[in-house]
Image (cartoon, rainbow, N blue to C red):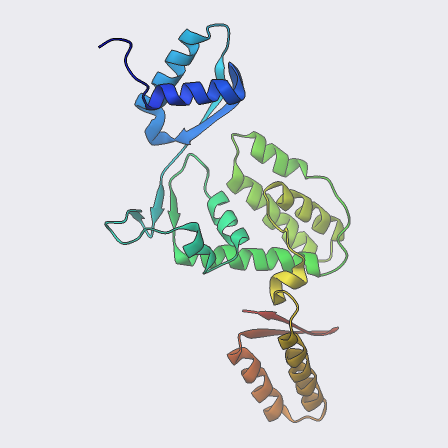
Length: 250
């Protein structure tokens, strides 16, 4: 047999040592790798460098399901990131992934992705409701993340802050933006989130909204309703407020 040949376990030990040294903080991987891969990787690394600790913390994530089934090409339910981003913004996918604890099985569904988008709509509306002051990451969010990366609890705290911000608490809006930023969320300008990048089409939408407003003032409600239906057919959602009519793309 001689000295043998490199295999998967020793390759990972070699790469870890080359790029991270004899000891580093966090080693991640799927729960299916715990044995034999990670046990062998740890054993041989500690034998080779007994003065080190190899990894201080091991983070094993659970598996991903798609609509309740294991994702595989044979089942025809294999998705790539590009497939998902064709359906929703990247932040919606990020929120969906963070909605389950990393050690819990995550079930990816189209409905779940749509719900994540709706949640972000609510968060962005909370930011758009008024000025957003600078704020530090809330202690409640930090405490949740310090508890074994409890991202579902951190998101629950964001929901509380969003509710307060929508009720007029602008300090809560600042805390919401800071806490969400810690998770890589709410990175867009609210207007860009709802309307997309400015385009020539925006001017046409604004013109139809102005025409609808004029029809309402003239008490021509049939025309106003027809204009609303026309905009809805284009995927434009109108929100009438005391300050005027806001719009966003559905």
